[in-house]
Amino acid sequence: MNLTNCYPSLSGKVVFITGGATGIGANIVESFCRQQAKVCFIDIQDKAAAELISRMSAIDGAVLPCYYSCNLLNIDDLKQSVARAINAFGGIDVLINNAANDTRHDFRNIDEQYWDERINLNLRHYFFAIQAVYESMKLRGGGSIINMGSMSWHACQGGMTGYTTSKAGIEGVTRGLARDLAKDDIRINTITPGWVMTERQKKEWLDDEALTTIKRNQCLASPLTPENISAMALFLASDDSRMCTAQNFIVDGGWI
Image (cartoon, rainbow, N blue to C red; front, side, top):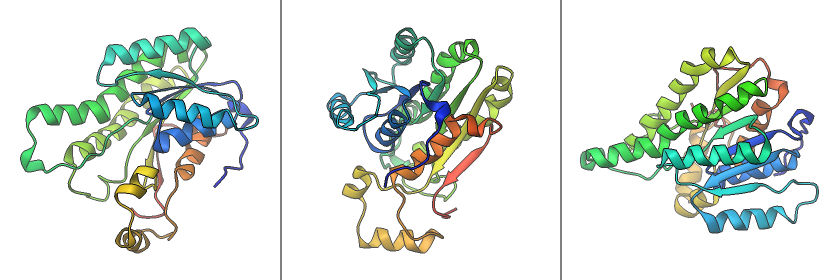
């Protein structure tokens, strides 16, 4: 599915995306590049990032993104990547906190180290990325921050408590920072995706039973695609959403 909306206000904007090499993140990178935005994305999957940039080079009219290898478990590494992007592009207008890991786990077997790792992988870096881009957005007269949540905790999904707890916390970060950031005309919102059929999800989970589950739980029967999430991200990053902040935008086909 190709996105059809064009947002002139995104042309030339500097967009920083975490976890942009694969899945939803990769589609978000591509979607913003098609809008003529200046995109910088970070990940630890160097090969996948190179393949994404190679695919992008074949798209007429798209601006090629910039990639930095970054381990988000290392907050200093994250801060350095943000600083590199600011130095390279003169500032950051849009931050999309997307990186996450939804590896399944049994709560009975979780120890302190694994719990901390889940929180660090799925929540901690969101806050510190916001902190790192704040001064740049303030100097540029405002900006848009988009945090990627999940319907999993809303739907009481089991089997990954560390992940669902983190995703619940992301909505808390959005709500808790909205008033503070608004003083500098910085907006912050959460996108809550449903079960999105990325290549990984299709490979690991999609079968006839999964399709039946989707049709049973969603009001809209069609499986979600990464483009459905990118469409919301484009809107929230653009000036068209200038009065939207502190909100949770659910894109789940009517599941929850």
